[in-house]
Image (cartoon, rainbow, N blue to C red; front, top):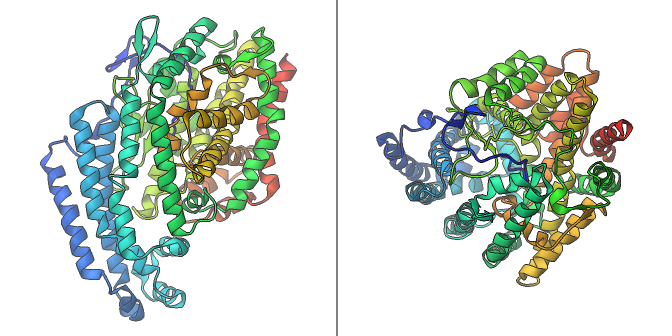
Length: 611
C-alpha cells in the first residue's frame, strides 16, 4: 500500500474520466462478488462463520496429539482446512474493504464494511486457538511432524515463521478478548479517522475541495496557489485538531497496553516482529539516513531554493515544480504505455502481468467525491487477483505512482502461488517490486530525454521522490518514536504533538526550508500513523534495498531477471537475508544502507553539475 503525502497538483476530475486524461478505468469487483447484496456474499458470510466453528470443534485441544502420531497425524489436513477458511474470510473482507474505499462517504458501503468486519472478527475468533496450540508443541516434536507428514511439511516456512511469535503469545482467553475487542477498539478509531478525513473540506477562494486535490495544489507552479493551499490545510486541520489528537492518544495507549501485556521491550518491536526484521537492522537504517540528512535533503533543498530564486523556501514551496518541469497533462493511455514499455524492456513477462490489470479492469483511477485518498495495491486472495486504487490527475508523479502500484500488483500475482498463508510478504520486502517498478520507469524515461532542461527537471523530481521515500519516512518514524515514548507518561496535548512534528521536520528538511505557522498541524493527515504504527520505515528500507538491487542489475551480465522473479514468487516463505543472498546483498551489513543512500547522493551530484 502506498499513500504518498503531498503529491502534485492537478485539477479535480470525477466520474469515468476527463477529456484531458482520457477514459479513466474504474475497477470491476465482480471477480469477488457481483454486488453488495449478492446471494453468494450472503452465503459465504454464513459459510465462513459455520466453517470456523466446525474447525474449532474438530481440532481444538488435539494438535499436540496429532503431532505425536508422526506420519499418521493429520496436521497437514488441519492446516489445509485452516488455510481454506482464511482464504474465504480474506475474500469477503477484501471485497468489503474495496467497496468502502471506492466511496467511504456512502452509508450503505460503510455499513457493509462495518458489518463484515464484525462478522469476520467473530468467525476468526474461532481460529485463534490454532496458531496458539501449534506454538505449544515442543520444537523437536514439531520438526519431526513436519518431516513425517508431507502435507504438513508443505507449510514448513509458515509454521517455523509462526514460532517467532511464540514468546509474545498470551493465554487463549486473553488472545480471544484482544481479538474480539479490536472491532470496538482500535478498528473503530481507525474508521473514525478515515471517515473524518473523507468529510474534511478545504476552502480556497470559495471553492470547497477534499484532501487530495488540496494537497496537490502544494505542487502548483504558482507560489500564491501553494500558499493558499497550505493555509486552507492548516485552517481545517486546526479546526479538527482535538479529534485527531484524541485518536492519536487513544491508539498510542492501546498499543502500549498490548505491547506491555505481550512483553515487547521497544515501542517498535511489534512492528519489527511483524516485518520479520531485526531491530538492529532498522536502527542501522534509521541512523544511516539521519546521518545523511546534510548531504541529501539539506543539500538538495538549498540548491532548489537557488533555482526558485529564494534565499529560503517556505514549507509550501518544498515540492514546487521547477520552471523546467513540463506542465502538460499526461493522458491515461500515455501513462499506461510509458509504464508497460519500461516493464517490457526489463521483462516481457513482467509487462504481460501488468497489462492484465488494464485489460481486465483491476484498476480504479479517477478522483471521486468520497473515494479514499492516495493509492494502494490490494492483494485480495490468491484465488482471485490484486486490485489497484489510484487518484490519477495526469502529472508525472501520477505516472510514477502507477508504476509503483503495478509493481506491487505484479509481486502479488507472482507470490499468489504460495497460497493464502504464505503469499504475503513483510512490509520491508513488500515495497521491493513497487520501488523497482518506479526505478525502471524513471530510468526508461531519462534515457529517452535529450533536452538538458527536461533532464534536470526529471532528475530533480526523482530526487524529491527519493527524499520523500527515504528521508521523510525516517523522519516520520522518528516522530512516531517521540509520540509513543512520551505517551507512556500520559496524554499528549495537540501542542506537544505539533512540537514533535516540527522538531523532526526541521532536522530532516534542513535550514533551507522555513516551517511557517500552521505546519505544526500537518501530522494529522498521515494515515500510516493511525492504521499501521511504524509502517513508514518500510518505505526507506525498500527504496535503499532497490537502489542496491538496481546497481546489481546494471552490472549483471545475465540471470538477474530470473533471480528477481524467484524472489517475488517466494512471497513470505523466506527471510530477507535468504532472498538477498543470490544478489550478493546483506541488509545486516552497515555498509548496505550506504550503497542505497549513495544512489540518491549521486543524483544530487549530477544535478549540481547541471547548474
